[in-house]
Length: 292
Image: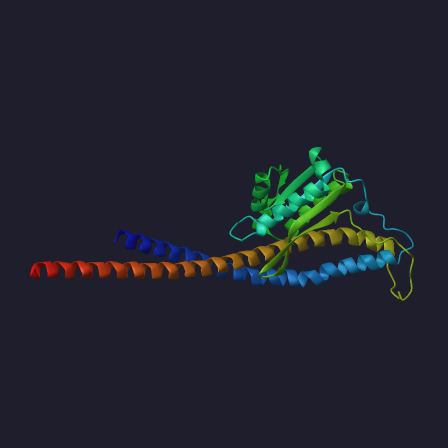
């Protein structure tokens, strides 16, 4: 009967776990809806800023002069890794750590050996994964997720932009998960700085737009706004991807728990039936012995 008791204990324990994973799945689903709406509505705005900037650059007689467009030899590199503060979301954070490791080894191995690569983490889980891989984290901005808003993200973006303009860094990379749908998150790496804009060709065919002030002034004003928007978009993408990954992971965990409970219940019933059969046989054997 000790075996039956152990099985009952395991079933009760797994049922408790299933209740937790099911609740986390529902919470993540509710948060995903809000985060998904935010990124879907924000993407057209961010895309339109890129489109306007490229249109301006293509129709100017000169190149855009901005400290954020300065292309320098990549000697000092900043990598901003956006992950989550909480786990239980499948391979969400591990994929980011792997992509960051791949980026450093394939593109910035020389700079890394010289100690010229700084890694800033936004999210405790990504930070932990990279530290396990042997990387030193030079900056931690994990508290952003506790007070996530455009204003808090803008402060971070402005600081990074200032460091680039002051030539503290020659290149800035963003590593994050792009939201595709609830079941799919795509780890991506984009060059945040310098901004790559087309060279001015002076082409004016079909351009009937009147610009006030000049195209160059508009482009200079547009670039920092586009950078802040791009950084916020990456954060929104990561937030939606995290909730999608956690919802999917908890859904699978709940299904696995249900399957395990069914298997254990079948095992329990078989063991219980065997125990009852054994008792019947013992009673029958005892009765036969008394008759003899």
